[in-house]
Image (cartoon, rainbow, N blue to C red; front, top):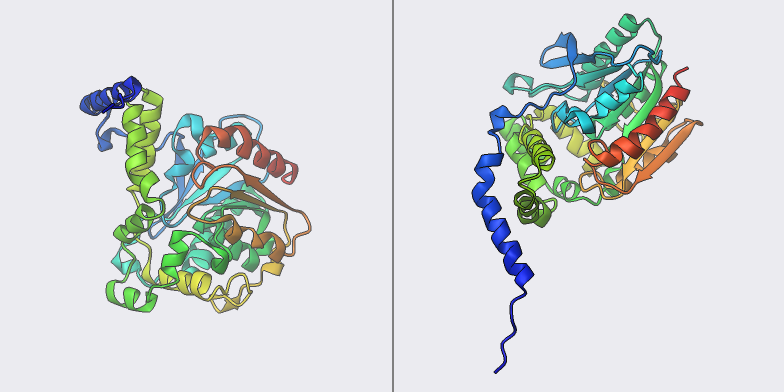
Amino acid sequence: MQHESIDPRLVEEFLKLTKNVTDAPKFVPAPDEITLESTPFDVVYEEDKVRLLHFRPLVEKQVKIPLVISHAIINRYHILDIQSKKSWVRKLLEEGINVYMIDWGSPTNIDKYLDFDDYVNSYMDNCIDFVRKESGVDNVSLQGYCTGGTLATIYASLHPHKVKNLIATAPVIDGWKDTTVVSNVTKQIDVDKIVDTIGNMPPEFMYYCFSILKPFEQGLEKYYRFFKNINDKEFVDNFLRVEKWLNDTPPIPGELFRQWIKDVYQENLLIQNKMFVGGRQIDLKKITMPLFIQIAVGDHLVSPECSMPLYYAVGSEDKSLRIYPTGHVGMIASSFSQKKVLPEMCEWLKERSK
């Protein structure tokens, strides 16, 4: 009986991987040794748990209209400034754009009654009014990423006179067209029972959602790549920064979560112009300022079909839709982002900020 021989390359790969696993403690720093913030900023405004960060300029010539960024409420803002070579913020600063960031903070039990009205018409509006006053301008450029893009879109429809340019990066808009695992899960849950029972949505729920998005890629394959590249300092540093960011998920206020799940995912009111925030109906046709939408083909958190309807729903005549061959995080924190995504956005933003 003839036995097939084992490919020596497989043996070599296995032995190398085993050695890398053994040597990992020598190359991997402890979590508290990893610092995510890489670009200096000043906290210029605070309200409750919310902070407004103003990043210090890196070049002398500045674009007149400042940019206010609303990051995703399900994570911390650090992904937009994850490291100097892949920092969304730093690239903007190098292009002469005056950058502010709304840090939503970490809600506690006392914040469980905060809803869309509080986030949009209080926190975001107060931050933007501060920037307008400090910069001496009537309106600002506003960018929202992921769920922060949804907040920015709603804000622009309610306060269009305060927004000169709107940038929506992977925004959650049409819940019924979202084909992701997150969307499918949220459409099945009894959100009233959950919020009435536990209040704020805990980080553990978000960890669960993230873990089931791509089980193989987020589990076995991810750590296989990590140990395989354990001697690559840049790869390890980037991996650990992203992992620390993922594990720093804040709670979501109960009432905000309730309204989010019902109005955006289950009843899909936002795209139908039937959603109410602070007693006012959201009409996307009132978004008439220049609009720039960024979508990632491989987005596993917000599917392209969920974001794309915004392009057709607004009243803007000057609008652009860009689709990129990358993923949710890759669109804002990667070498591809630095070489392709950001240069296109900066060029568009500068032209409309004159």
